[in-house]
Image (cartoon, rainbow, N blue to C red; front, side, top):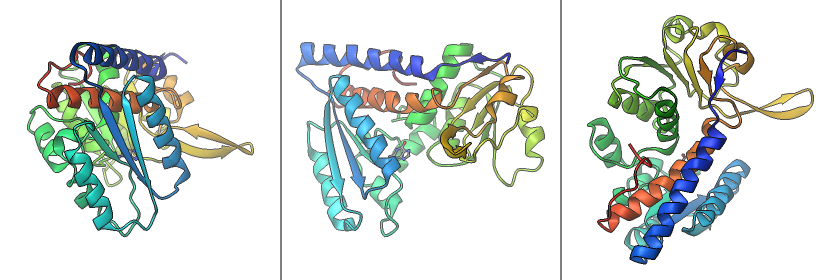
Length: 296
Ligand code: GUN
């Protein structure tokens, strides 16, 4: 292996420490405790693990955590009523509705019911538009975490060719917008891209966000490139469950200049950035200066 490992676990701990310091100052100087409300419908085990982790880390950062666990068959009217109450609650600065939602609910409608100023996921159509036009917005947590790590590793990204594999609203599209904002030349590739291996090989920065275990092998990676692996895929190996990324780690690490591992790369940054977004939202809601280095 020749690639430098970009340690997301360590980086996320630094972000969380910065968040906690700022929360301490907000409490001491302004009597303000940022609060994050997380809404979970149903009993999907993976979502339950995420939500528990979010609640724990929110409290550890000194913030208020409000959790709403609703039944899988919760009606749209009931969920919209809860969101309306959270929108009007001055103790709540961030609202996150865990996705995916049960099939009977319209995710777009639900997300767009959240006050954009409290939309710490950055999924509301207003925030999508603000990000796309280079204006101040709430930035989706996973791409924000990826950008923070890339800036930390490279400094200036301008002029680099970034290939984002995956076109989801949660990762691929906002990631591309952020990289464009940092003056990369950006290509969004996907399952229909012609000669995907050659496209990946042209990337100085390769972001893999497709959700397919080890789909990208080392010979798709340009020597010296930086590889950001957003995938978290559960596979069975030798009778055991294992987490792997969208990139085949061993072969990619042999040619890349730097790579994020799975686990311990992008994953821990997502919740750290959620906490960062909650502090940013609390500051904006109260007309206070935003902490340095917690948003773009
Ligand atoms: N489900 C998986 N990732 C996410 C995320 O970043 N935000 C929300 N709301 N749900 C998710």
